[in-house]
Image (cartoon, rainbow over all chains, first blue to last red; front, side):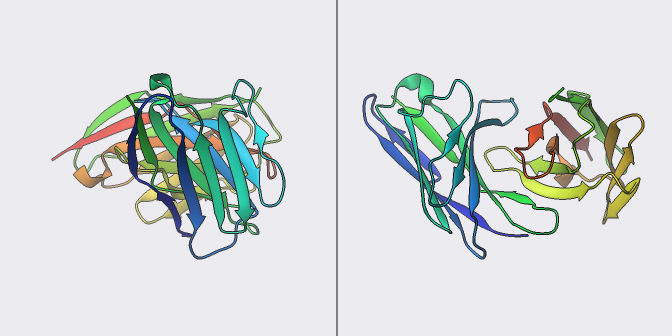
Amino acid sequence: GAVVSQHPSRVICKSGTSVKIECRSLDFQATTMFWYRQFPKQSLMLMATSNEGSKATYEQGVEKDKFLINHASLTLSTLTVTSAHPEDSSFYICSALVAGGYNEQFFGPGTRLTVL
Amino acid sequence: QQQVKQSPQSLIVQKGGIPIINCAYENTAFDYFPWYQQFPGKGPALLIAIRPDVSEKKEGRFTISFNKSAKQFSLHIMDSQPGDSATYFCAARSGTDKLIFGTGTRLQVFP
């Protein structure tokens, strides 16, 4: 399957700081990427859909000014958690859509964010 | 309408057993049904997927059974191994819309 990477895999930051997470499609171009967050023992919750060259589409209840998404190229999308607070601590996972066929969606390995 | 109901929440089998995880949906516009496997601290990995024009798909030890009239689909893991212990998520999607995920099933396979 297609490979999606995320960086960093783990980040610890102080409350009030901003954190940027990168998502890259390594062996294919992705016009559409997705950002999820996952709490322990729960399912994936879609935060936003990121389309290359256009504004992200946020799910209801997700603050677009807090979770900034940029999809500047066909292989890179970034999620910036601005003014992070302890309640933002979570597992953030991106995925990328492989266009054609089944339009399969492949996930990155996730980023564990801990806000102190 | 957009929900995908998954059961059971957890499942324990012995090595060699055949765990079965079930999912049900309401939206008849769904036309893509993938299963993902997730290990602790990792992202989900696509295991197998099916479209509603077939009733069964097999890849290695993993089989999806699909019942269009009942709006149900299930994952069977043949000859399960301790390494299969993970959380499994079913999902569904219409066209290129977002994936709707089930709540997950935590599988434990004991030696």
